[in-house]
Image (cartoon, rainbow, N blue to C red):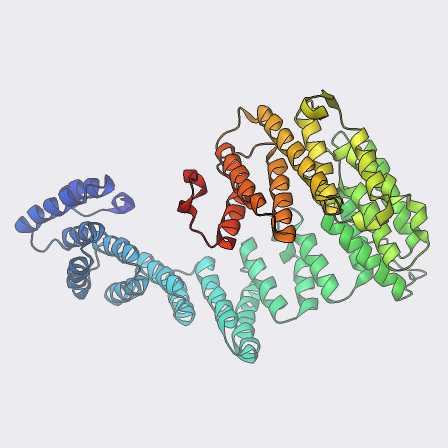
Length: 533
């Protein structure tokens, strides 16, 4: 047990065999060993608690509790007993008893940093935030370390979050927390990044966005280093709250120049550009555009900026998706606003086709493109899908005249097209005979794809799992929409087979549960795999 590493008691040698039995799961021997020890040393409290742990683990909860309370009533202060009782109460799911344990210990040993720390953590486990605050300050008075002071500050924030009265939160708890941190700031005692984060959190919750921005941009903000662009992200959030769109735009533009693949900054960049356009913002004649530098405030500048990012991407050794998706996003926004400038960026269908050629072998390609398929006219859906299929390297026609992917890359590309076909409703518009034909083809492709996943671990998904899932969804359509009862039994068969190859596939399991529930049957009514039950 972990407790042994901290034992400094002279009885450690006597207790060690009991610890070993408990560690190895031999609880009966632990109880026997504890009884032997207690016959010789009746006042060895830790042995009683270790016996109680053994009793708890053998299902004798009442006996364990009685024995534990006998020791707790004595208010022990030795590490062995306290830590063993803590373990026992945790296994009993009675964390509130740990607080009483350390409250008594702190009264007896008022200057113990360790016991005060344990008491604070015990309060944290039961959500006693007011007592956490008091324990944190008591600990800080004994050992004046910054972490302990800020434990108390964090306790105030937790009180504000849990307060049912929001007014009380903003008039008492958060202002008190703010004053406590400001005291440390004035005394120049802020040491850690977490302390700055806490200060920022308080100001943000108080809606003091300007003050929060000053903290991040000032000397304290220099401590925000653990997360990539932590300081810039916080600045961005405050600029948005303050509706300072010029700064928002300039900062997002600058960050995109550093990393043109960060999608969140493209969204902020577009949001700010169109806000500035709506406000008819113009830059000052003799001053900087903003605190963060140059500002883009027109559609022409936005179009040019995105084109430049794509040009830069072409020089990169690693293909970046961000600039290409940003172009489609800009077209979508321009169309939504009824602007006539979208033609400057190109034809959405051609842009999506080029994107597919570049990134179609990545599993994320479908989720990337699905956001923008509404840019296509419905009359072009079939043509678009046919266009995509033409660039996928498929082998010569196999059984049934079906051309199959030659490698994993081609399989991923084909899967992307199949998913897009489903999304665009091409399968839904088919007659029953055509749907059955598609289902047979999908299962053929699924079985063929299993060849590429022979070396996959059981925890990994097969590359072709989506073929099976799509086939099942088409069968479900036949069952739910056309009342084809045989389709549901085919679904169960396919899912159970799929689960035998991909035991960790959550979608297979969820679909099985869904179908069994619809049929009002228990899973064990039919022969199922152990992992699918």
